[in-house]
Image (tube, rainbow, N blue to C red; front, side):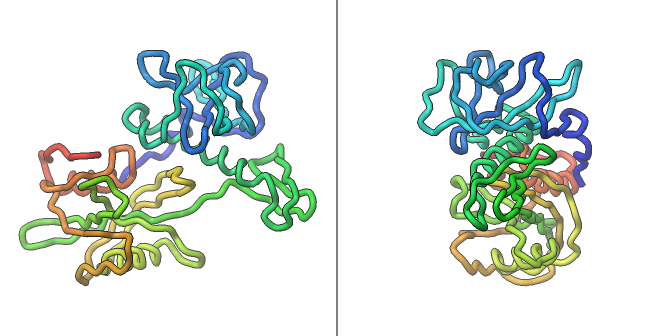
Length: 295
């Protein structure tokens, strides 16, 4: 099991009300789903400025996220820039997935937090019950309707992700499936959203059967990871094969196979919990694992 407990807490203190700025802050600004980055230096970086106006980028609905810890606290803000806004020289936008090879897991996690808060605020300007304009609360991260009192919080969509393994006569195997939308040759572990009224374990059983026809047992918790595509919390598990043959009952999965630890296909990047599940399987069953191909 991976242990990331405290990693974010040790480097970042979340907050709602912004302090008085006496130094540059980080600005996580999104144009649609794409994050604004500064490419004027030797490497891509999150823009920093005392005020967002100094960046020359129009920003609306900015939110204080909290502060990075260190010799001095560095405030962090999220925000949105209009889709048709012209960016000043040296600034570009990237999809978060395209930044996996440029930023570490901590930075991607913070950018993901900013994206979810910015998009939640954008999508809840009006009450979903009565249509009135909502108002932000100072005491917590929420928007309340002054007419009917409905309070909206940042949405979190729980999803399971599971590494299913089995013991064959010629060695251990892991179940990897290929989604129609994946890049060519890529496979990953099974994942799916939790339905209303369903436990996490029930979701594991259902998703694996629905996507592959395989039944599982011995479900165990592995790790979790916020995943801002668009607002998921991925809850990782391991499970063991209990029976069944491959049956693909919908148009989502095009193929699934049992792979040996030394003969894996293309798999997700290291920053994802999917890859951590796969790496953990490889580590358990090989002493000198070959390099794993990623996309």
